[in-house]
Image (cartoon, rainbow, N blue to C red; front, side, top):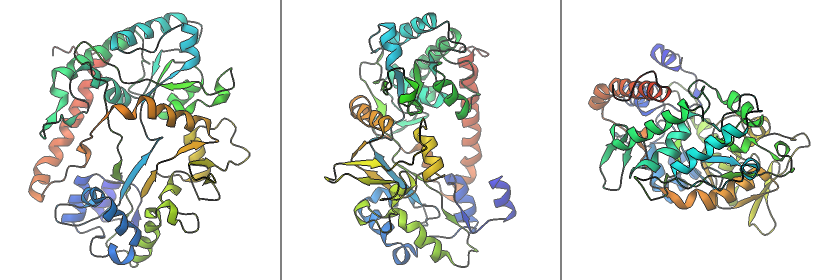
Length: 408
């Protein structure tokens, strides 16, 4: 829909959602349909100017090849931003199982869970969006830790979905699918369906959505969710996972026809305020935690942060709480907080588990989704990259569910 509006020139004063770089190149750099922040942000956005000085990669990330800036950049770094595989500690105890360290141990445990919980309707040992399998399981099968593109440490861009490592990974996930160890709707489930199954106790391992399980979902009345450390295999002995995606687009694209872009620039600039310089409770953390002093605050010693919870938050997951009480969009601006949460059991779990079982194993992320091209390169590559991505995603799904043999 946004492409149709852009092609027709039907652009509102502001587009909140982010757009990929090929669209920015076509309709911003070449088409002149978007407002260019670059000549004006130092005058109207002092907080973003300061953020660019403190985090030079932010500016580099947001700047197109001709020096223009058409959409804003987020810098997100907290103890609760990992995208891991979780597991239910209560089921692990019931199974009498140790935390798996290798892909073979992981497979064996999934089989044991499948054969044990036959009384739970719709039970699959592992429920996840396919994205989180790619991110967390693929690195176990070789030297690479990122896909589809990667930089494996030698400074050269690699296309890792054509590697032997990717093939080994697909063979493994196909085995999980064939043996009914992962949900058979892995390629068709939406987030609401996944969350409902997780809350219904229909799995042992959970891809990325483990904070859906609050203390109300455990018989003990305590959050017993844990994070699975990266696995290894006969092809790789190093525990590793790609670094969290700290830099990203946060949209906030202004139309070139907007009569008063300075008002929007001043508004967006609030979200680049450092927490210690917050004014009226608004800073980048507001797109995550809400208004400081209203929705959240720091402890007196300044070592932790905590939610100021309304009365009717019983059973709400972090995502549900955020959408209902805080902010309906994605992260915006400077979302950096080097503190651990209290008064929020699911986030306490994620923060401490991430610090122990995820962050120590992170490897550098190449920002492959944000490649920038010249006008000539964009004309040649934009549709080609789209076609390749579609082909890879389709073939991956077909290989995993078994409709196309890997030898084809």
